[in-house]
Length: 137
Ligand code: SME
Image (cartoon, rainbow, N blue to C red; front, side):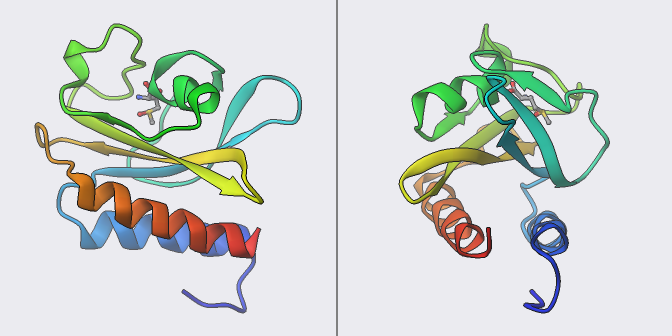
């Protein structure tokens, strides 16, 4: 990741790297809290374009993490009633909040086309990625 690039460009590179290098990461993106609007706005992402560029707090997995400030691992998206489908190929999802100075300012969101692929190692790894991203924001 090139430290001469802008934060947005570096987050784009991170998304593309994670998607390319980790077989069970099929869509990788960052959502950020949008001012005081109580909604998330899509930032950098790698994977298929999504209609869900704005997600209200409380809606879907992402919207719930905006309020809970906790990791959310979904082994089977079809078993979730508060879930926003982006693609019919997606089987599982993980969302990890991004903290800057202790404040939840957004999140990394990963979709997988593999059923139940996420382990504690993904959570630990994505917490590390977010901590690195927090340093450049
Ligand atoms: N599935 C997410 C919506 C975002 S897409 O996965 C890119 C959710 O339920 O919040």
